[in-house]
Image (cartoon, rainbow, N blue to C red; front, side):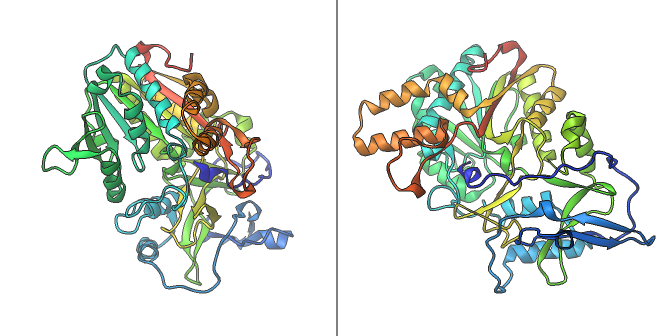
Length: 474
């Protein structure tokens, strides 16, 4: 997302690799971690010394935990979500994982960030690629038609979009493929969306009319296509050739964070301090997510592991990918994943964004978006492990992906029939999708300079082995 382009990631120090993966659990309480906004200036301000039961002392390095803050010093009444989180921690008798905190913040049924409002666009907290330009959804449409051709033009296809936002991508996809009637007639659209507010927006933008009394089923007048809504991918019927689109979905999946310490890899947790404020602490012993950590590290080289003092993993990413791969392997079809991420182990990337600015992750939970870099090697290995009937292609940059599908020709065609204002908007949107850094042609206000995400976003495809290599990964 464009939310990712607001600031570069902070640098990380390289620690010794002699610390064991997991050593004997400590008997000490949870180690407290600082969330101070002040840059570290000495060891005394960045390292906390924790007394062990045996009389020894361990040091917890705080220096890499610096997070840009936008925090009001004046106390405010706790929101319903804050009260809920504190009650969960109190009931558990200890801290919760960062992943559980993230999931509650984003999808709590009553107070979750995504659940009851429209968070997209200039009036929201961030802007997504489909909102930047119609050309993005049109190019995704090109990709789906090409894959459908490779699938043998099946008469019925489940087209699934995970986390469709306002429905903008699907609207542009249907409009862009409207001339391919055999393709659009084959589609049964399934939108995986847990937010009632966003489901309502999707229904409006897709110009849906109710086919029956069910709120989960309708017909889009854009192409006469049936549309269904589901809370999870598991609810979507299987047994039918499937095309899955996961655009800017994986980065919102909960992540577990681990930090290297003298006791080995310890999971970072969220606790409530004596001042009733949320704080980060380290787990004194291995947690259930440690199994996924060990699995992820078997997919990495020793050199990758040694250079990190933090590791971020997403078990839900691994599990979702395996479910997708099994479905594609048995039913045919493919999945397209486009997101902000890296083709390597992820260190410490979790960030919060409110009104297009980075804020403290623990500040006023539920009022800001939380997202993390996508671990593309984890997706690849998870898919290949789940089914021998799938092949994984990529990742490649979004610029390469869109360019190979013909976005350059599309923008040229659109520029032939527009006025100066429309042309400026098209060029700006084009640069945001495929460019790198600031647009060289921009003559407006510096604060509005288009920033390209063409090399910051990656695209990956998972397809049934029998279908060959999908465009444009040949």
